[in-house]
Amino acid sequence: MKSTARLLVVLGGLLALGAARAEDSPLRVTELDVCEDIVDRTCRGGDKSFSSELESVSFVTRVEGATGEAFVTHVWTFEGEEVRRIRLPIRKISYRTWSKKTIKKLPGRWKAEVLDPLGRSLGAVEFVVRAPQT
Image (cartoon, rainbow, N blue to C red; front, side, top):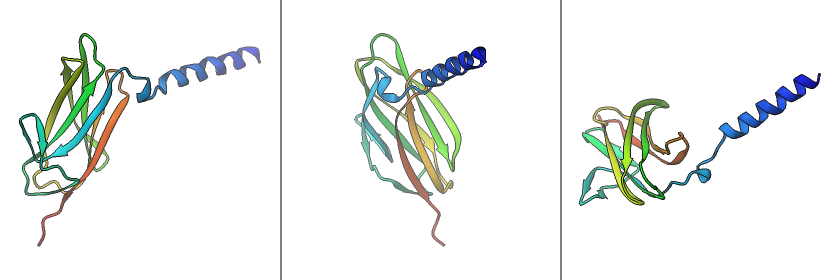
């Protein structure tokens, strides 16, 4: 009985350790957007709804708090399924980075999320690609 209780305590501690939240991360996102294009490192044509005739969208994040070698991961999800994962270096204490995803003729629900090196979510943007009008 004592060994079962001890095992439950150890498992509970491991679960608590694995459930780390983004606020535990030294990195934080201060800018987060999806848009049609990047101009001078700035998101242009930002929206939460895009035409399915648009070739691609960009996911822009500004990450702060990095020291030394750091990275974040952009995860693109379509209709609840992961479709792309991109590891991006963070080269300064405050650094803007972005990734692109082709969306042409892929109407539906999308999400772009940024993860810290331990896989904790630092933020996400949900958007829709509209079906072509007939």
